[in-house]
Image (tube, rainbow, N blue to C red):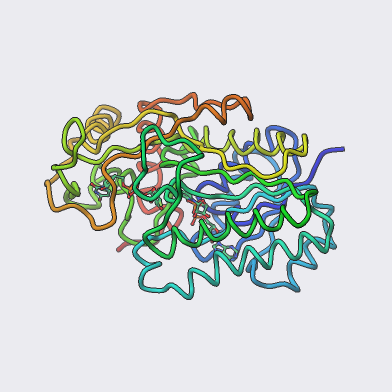
Length: 343
Ligand code: NAD
Ligand code: UFG
C-alpha cells in the first residue's frame, strides 16, 4: 500500500514542487497550509499538472486540535514540514510572530506526531544556520550561528529536534539545509510567487526582465569574490524537491537525526546570475551597484558530498535550466497566481 505524507506548507514554493515529486513516486499527500504566504490556486495547478486530487486542509500548524483531527482522519506515515515564515527583514521587525510560527508551530506539530505515533520527519532548515561560514565549501560539521530571528528559529528547531531524538531514538529526522532555491516547474504553471517586493535575487531579476521593476540593485561590489559581488549556491527547486524524496526514503532505514546540505556545490555571483538570466530571457537586466545589504555574507556554497553518499542525491539541473524555468513561470504568470494583482 502506498504511504501517505503530511506536507505542512505544501501550497508554498518548495512544497508545491515537492508534492508533484511525491505524486510521481506513488505517495499519497495531505497538505496542511494556512495560505499565509500562498494561494489555493497553487494547489489547483498541482492538480492540473499531476492529474491527481490534492487532499488539502486549510489551517495552522499551531492549531493542536486541528492537527489531532488530521492525524486521526488520515493514516500518516511521515511528515515533510515546510510551513514557516521566511523573510529575514520581517523577522527582525516581528520576532514574536516568527518564533511563534516557526518554533512553537514545530513543537505543536511534533506533539501531535508523538500522540499519533508518527516518528519520521523531514524539516526545512537553511544554509543560514552557518552564519558567515567558517570555511568553504560549507560542510555540515561547521559551527552554526544566527544573526536574525529567522535564522535563530531554524537553529532552535534543529536543536529541539535533536533533543526529541535524544529522548526517544525511534524518531528519524532529516534536517535539510537548503542553499538558494530558484527556478520553477518546467510547465511554467507553478513557481515562486512573492507577495510584496521580492527580497531574493532571482524573483527580483525576473520582475525586472518582465518590466514590472525598473532595475535591480546589486548589493555590494566590493566583496572578496572574483567580481566583487556576493556568491551563492543556487539550486533548482525541482532538484530540491527530489532531495526531499530521497530523504524520505532514507528515513525508512531508521537513521536517527542528521543535518544534510542540499546544494549544488557551485557558487555563482550576482553578475553571473544577471548574465545567465539575460541569456535565458533575451532581455536586458538593468542594474545599479549599491551598498552592501546589512547581514549578507560574501560567499556561501555547499559541500554536497554527504547528500550524495547518504541519500544518493545530487543536483542535476544547471544555471540555464534555473533561469529558463524561472523566466517561463514569470512570463506565463506576470502577477503570480493572482491574475487580478496589479500593484
Ligand atoms: P513559502 O512561503 O512559499 O512556503 C511556506 C508555506 O507555509 C506557505 O504556503 C505558507 O502559507 C505556509 N505556512 C506558513 N506558516 C504556516 C502555519 N503556521 N501553518 C500552516 N501553514 C503555514 O516558502 P518556501 O520558499 O516554500 O519555503 C519552505 C520552507 O523552506 C520554509 O520553512 C523556509 O523557511 C525554508 N527555506 C526556504 C528557503 C528559500 O529561499 N525559499 C531557503 C531555506 C529554507
Ligand atoms: N542580491 C542583490 N540584489 C537583490 C537581492 C539580492 O544584489 O535585490 C544579492 C545578495 O546580496 C546576495 C545574493 O543576491 O549576494 C543572493 O541574495 P538572496 O536574498 O536571494 O539570498 P540570500 O543568500 O541572501 O538568502 C537566502 C534566503 C534566506 C536564507 C539564506 C541562507 O533568502 O532566507 O539564503 O539559506 F537564510
